[in-house]
Length: 274
Image (cartoon, rainbow, N blue to C red; front, side):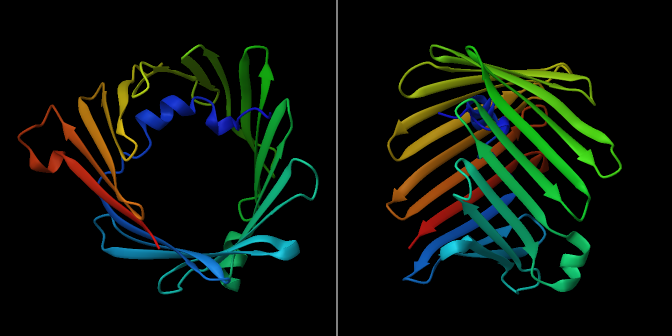
């Protein structure tokens, strides 16, 4: 079994402390399937700057692999993504490109190979428009999983270098990360208290602290909460209303400015499958 991707080191704590807390956003997502043609995902969202929408059409095409067309609902900026596995055992390649010639000339291609082995997981991202290559690797080191990430420009400049480590002991997972450019150190802890409750803590060398928990009410609903050093209390609730509809509600309360209405935020997401 391959190690997790570099970005997934510390994932358990990150999911509790950062995932799903989407404030100042109202979003509706519809997933459907055109029989024997393609899968469709249509998204409408309002982030306070007016309603906008995106659409994805995905289909498996023989030797090409999975082909996805992404576009705004007004077709102003369509892009094409091709994802192919099986060329070499453990290797998957994804290529993304704008469909419009002027966009392609400006942004170029994004090529993202991924290779997994029993002992190592490698991922990379090549952006021809920016002339940069980002590479990361994660591998097993005894009881721990360690990884490194960096970005190299065509000029030879190296940036964004960081190293991470994750170790699981029983129901507890501890992870740490060091960002070389910022000389910043951060860490997280995740533990399972019971079958229904998980707790996570993150700390940083900049004195940032966040504490959160996830409580599974039943098979169809759960609630998350977290509080940070700034006194922001975040709450998230998810309910599977029926088999084809899930609602997600999130809110952020600034405990230092309780009387100021514009200091608080909320978000709503509805995900429907047809």
